[in-house]
Amino acid sequence: MTEGIPAGEVPEQLAATPAGTVTAACVGVGNTDNGGGHQEVDEYDALLAVLGRSYDDDVRIATHEAGHIVVARLLGHPLGGATVDPGSGYEGRVWGECYAEAFTNGRGDASHVREALAPLMPKPGEDRGSVSDVFGNVYAQCIELMAGRAAERMLLSDGEPAPPVDDLRQARELAMLICFSEEAIETFSAHCDMAARDLLLPYGDVVIVLSTVLRIKRTLDSDEIDKIIWDVEARKATVFERIRRAQWQQRVENAAAFDHG
Image (cartoon, rainbow, N blue to C red; front, side, top):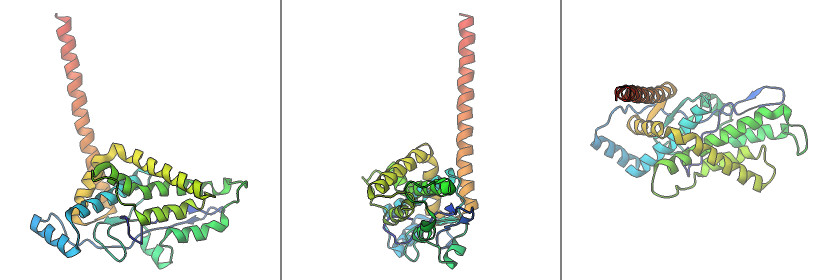
């Protein structure tokens, strides 16, 4: 979720109990597409005026949410969709497949996940083998929560972005399941922050395309998101293959000229 908003993307399929039952923390409040395909500039400006949002803020929010999307898919997390239109308590949102069920059952926040799993977690010094999946999923989901700010840092040049208050809060809630001191939580969060950046660095072009389409369409479902990512990667692969073939042809021609020299 975009920074400073009191509700966020709670990771889905967060953890399994020692017995192996999955405790899903599916996220987000659904938002239907507002009908925005390609909008003329004046329509876009009118939309921003209605939202009370500047162009720069809209770009920031779209970049933030696109960062969450790309890292979620790189980590293999399924998505339900994403929006950059504001709703009740958020400016933009990425949600998992089971968000409706999660909110119906009152499981729509990382704090609910922590409350449910904390009694099952081993104490310091106890064997953690039975909950190793919890540790792995907490790690992955905290990286995903840090990805919005990482995308802003990577692509926007207006200095350090404002702290993503709700993303950080939810990451802290999850980190408390596996960390036993404030220092450990801060160190773990800093590591996840860097890991999100490292994942995003090779995919800046995907983040840019996703954020641009999000600003145009306002809401994307999971199929649209995956199609955009696939299209960007396919086009990139085609360009790289053309470059590779051109370089190979140049080597062949250079070798032929050398043989006849």
